Amino acid sequence: MKRIWIYQADRILTVEEGQQIAVELSAFAEQWKVHGKPLSASAELCDNLFIILKVDEDIAAASGCSVDSSVRFLKGIEDRYHVQLFDRMQFAYKSTNGVVVANREEFEKLLAAGEIDDNTLVFDNTITYDHQLDSAWIVPFKESWHKRLFA
Image (tube, rainbow, N blue to C red; front, side):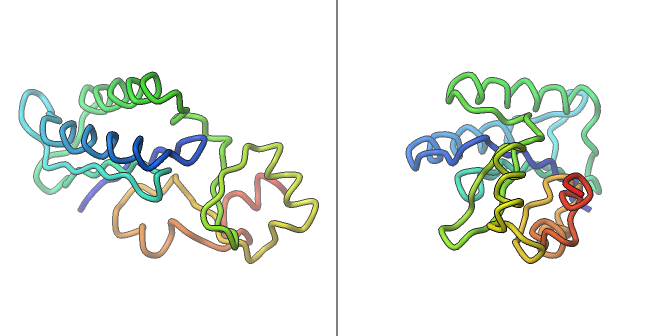
């Protein structure tokens, strides 16, 4: 089973930034280790917004040290590209213009204005296994943890 970690930027990255980060992600995944042994890992950038790290736990699970190394790597991306990846109060949703990012205050205003409603598709970056990407990552607002937060 593949364990995943999803990190969302606080803004849509430019195409150039996305291309550069994709190269860095690939290089990181190739050298990512647990206790000195390579992990069966991959890393990808989706929608120039989401970084998804995957580890095949059937081969070897990521440990505290290997997770720490991924956090250090991602902090480096934050510094180099002037982007926030650890702010969990940035929300992504689908609009007619594509994927949009809003901070908590903006999201609340959009909700109050009716621009976000129960059927708006939101991204749940708290999922932990890759099989959930198809069924639980993008869900209607009414079925998300966001609904409880903004109740």
